[in-house]
Length: 256
Image 1 (tube, helix red, strand yellow):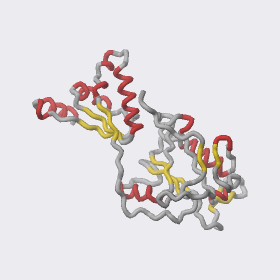
Image 2: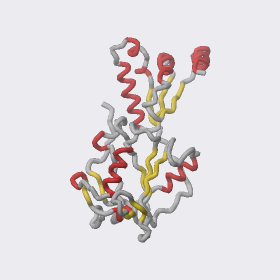
Image 3: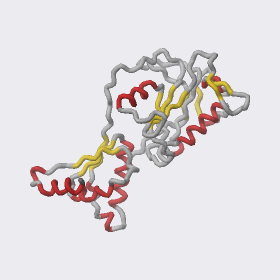
Image 4: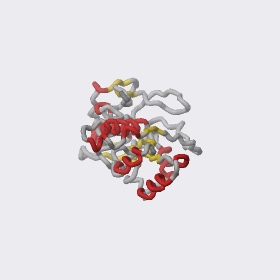
């Protein structure tokens, strides 16, 4: 298919050439990168990433390859590849009404079960630590006037007699906190587009959980932590904002 497409490009006169646009989600997936060179040398390829951090990753890769001491890599034409970002914004209708929610009960991690791209181990470690009440206060600014960080009750759970396992606390009205994994291979399997966004719409928040391989977040800031606690509210388009913030907000990596 690739060879036929390239031959079709070569067969056209200059007024009827076309440009190949590649929609890219993950710069780390390099299985198709071997096809870049013939199109780059023809100045006929463009990478369209789904976010700015993905386009930055492609830009850095191409800059590195084009400056390589290896003459084969240096002549591959990567410096000619245009890289842009297109961030889709969907006009979703019939979203669930969340104005009555008083606590954060549902969080979702988007992505496949790849511990390199998603910091699952650290997220689960943090979750277990905080269910037990092991709270590293020095890392956080606590703005809420009332919290229950020393008890799993703030998460909506009861500790069993074995001191390890938890069960939902049915004596309280608020639902227990749940973490959803939404992606390619997850408890939510084989979702179509509308089903996927239905799941996302039900969530209170989305946790990026980007792993060490992703340069969009600085390594020391890559783990946003979710706290379920009593909090005062700010009315921002009828959405509740938790009054607990982690020191050091993630900052996007800027091109030099």
